Length: 172
Image (cartoon, rainbow, N blue to C red; front, side, top):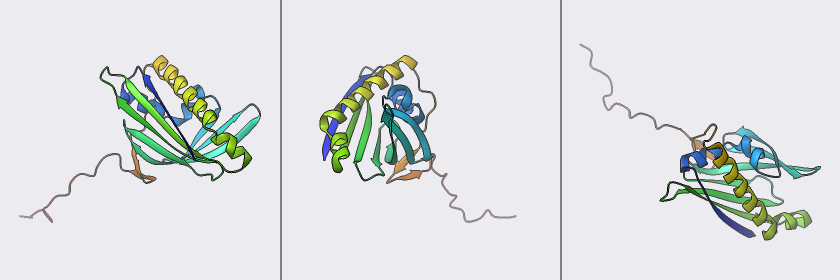
């Protein structure tokens, strides 16, 4: 298993960076190799990735997501498999530090190439630079999903109001 970690600072507030990152359908605009992203369920996406005529579909499950903090995912495919996490941290100057960690596991010849640390590092580094250019050029995110996911399960966006402690209202 190979682990790659890359960090970049973007000139936007945490909320803007996080909101833009969670708009997965916009990834083809800034991420080379991503052709399309479809949201299957709130915690499952299908990514079409590739270069030139070569295309591959990859299912991704979001296992943890906390607004303005972090998002963790895992591939649903076994060969090659990967897990990742992106975290967002506000800096003293009001910018955002974004850190991406990706762990890949090789299976077979194609998996060895995909999981090679140099290849994965270049893809992650390039994607972060392109995201920086994209979000700083926009200045604000278009859309947002502010929900929380824990262990692959979507949590309610707002807590339920407290129940009355009175079993029933007195009548007359």
